[in-house]
Length: 590
Image 1 (tube, rainbow, N blue to C red):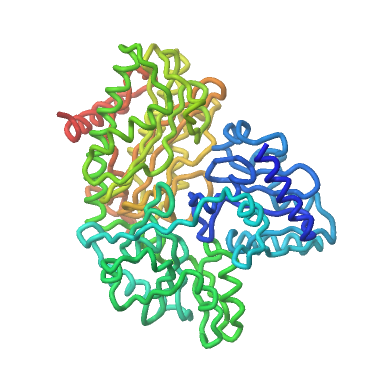
Image 2 (cartoon, rainbow, N blue to C red; image 1 turned 90 degrees about the horizontal axis):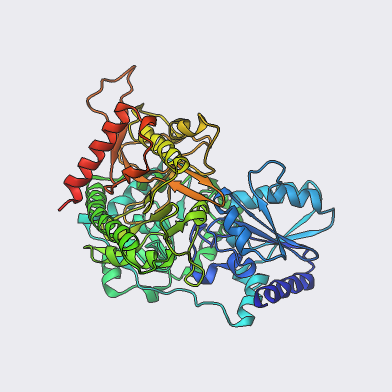
């Protein structure tokens, strides 16, 4: 098969280079969660389509792929027998670095592309391999030596590198001009020893310059870097993407350089102060370029100040986010009514794939609609237990009336980004399904109703969403909440609600998801997700100088009541459900 021959061709290329294994991550040069088709190297070589995972192509022997609990079921289905699935985080499963150290010996060589791995990951790998005298060799696409690219280009099946036009957002949407944003960044630079800040994350580039693009599916970003110095900003981009209107929007304070000229700029010996970049986000290739300028002190490794700035939505951004959620609620509520009546009353067979297309049809009728914010997850019955399931047209299940249907979808609008999950049943749910749905809902409501002192990180709230499941010895294998951008990426940091230790407090203006779930493999999945805005609880006094925060619901879409086991719900929880549905009716009703 083509997939196996391409893997074997890569193994042959590695042999010719004297490399014993090659690391293939999911990311691009910007460490993006979703990548353009041109950059989907791990998918090309392994067949695994999940958005998170790292492959290790072993020249002699079976290759391995690591992914997390969201993708175990999907990877089992998609990987051929030439691959071993490594279930990250499970007892007894070595992570990639540990596996290489345990299985390779002194004198062997591991390759990677320094532009496709974060600096922090590369340095950890380099340190651990050096302890065992295993060599780490760079095979850069910048120098045409990446073996995956060599094989893929030779097969003539590789998609073209995207060159889609850039658009600008107006001040009514962004609330702050890009000139003012750049000044805020320059103010942050002035408090450090750095000459400049490298902006490598694509959503940070888009936010900073008030531009959007379509180079990557679902994320309205353009592939580019920005360097902000104390006196100017430089945009490194393919200038073919820039219309005269965009060049006018950017203005004379922003100079434009070719995308490929970033590394020569960073290594320029005339610079006498370090470049500020985040080793957890910036790729190792650009880091090495900056570090090569030893006279300047190389690199100042600190988190980008833009991540936090971007997460704190201003009044204009919040107004757009609230408005687009009302329109999204109208579209989704109408869609859910259509779906339930069609499945229940019609002879027409509806597949999971049909749902993905139909939901987009309903949303596309809404003002300012751009497209989906991620691949719709529409899983009926056992497929609902595959956390990031994607229905393929020729393999999609038909929706029946015997099991649960999990639907996780979102949209990009010009004024905001949405992400919502509902689980429902068009027939008669079983007692087990009702109990599990109610326990997930109890967790969802507990987090929604949380009031907490200012300065509290999301990890301290995560258990609220799990307690009702923990009480019966159950859990779910993913975080409870991620940050969401303002007409930007559906996943953003630094805010999150997760069991992983986290020092970033939740702050007013942040948007996070609230999405506990439960998954019974081979049977069904349940998830209930709303987006929440973090707000100041002004009605409460301060305690020892600290105020209190809470959440305001952004999502207005009904929750199916026939899935409730009512004796598990308290009076307070039933009142929450009634007040939520009144809010839905008031906002999106006729």
